[in-house]
Image (tube, rainbow, N blue to C red):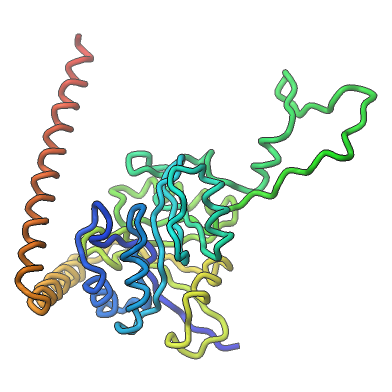
Length: 308
């Protein structure tokens, strides 16, 4: 059977996200230039720009796949391949089921990193978790065998099967250390989940710094691959994680290329949009400086409180 390898960055933010910076056209252009076959725009709790990117992806020679990073009651969750915005603020397992019912794949992004709204391990639905949660427990901690001489209720309904996630983000290029990535890899291996890598890019130069290679069966070339093929490959687990620190010369080339493409893009789309982008960059810088100052004050107060 014929097969083809597809390279995808499944976790990228655009200007549609409250913390994103780039228009989807520029992201798609950059993704095509650096050799990706698909990039999924996963803005925070909004799906409009992602759907638009999926619609025009073919103009850049890319596979169009919509997605979103939804805020659940227990942390962030990637919904890939959905056309609608999942309900926000719902339990993790409920949101996973919602995504699966609509043909999408649910991927855990930057797991266990609470500073970035990563989900705690205990809130990720795993095989057997429903049974464990519903099983009666005796005072000594052992499963309760029931009262002696009684039979289990034959009309009692069995626990509903757990709606498990489809994959774990085991390499997130935004993490400053490898500890969380290694922990995510161990968790995925323990429970048999496919691992994916993603850039989690909020700026153009980071798109594709980490990506996932998927093996798609039954296709002669990438041009034949559809979004459904990509989703099926993720579910099957035919994934290879590609996320390593780039050599300095490669990183420089990556950043210079991104800067050149950004300049060319704004030159084509007009000075007005370029001026707005410059203003937005200045505002982002001011906000970042303010946050850094507040964090510094908070740390200083916390330090002094130790001696109070």
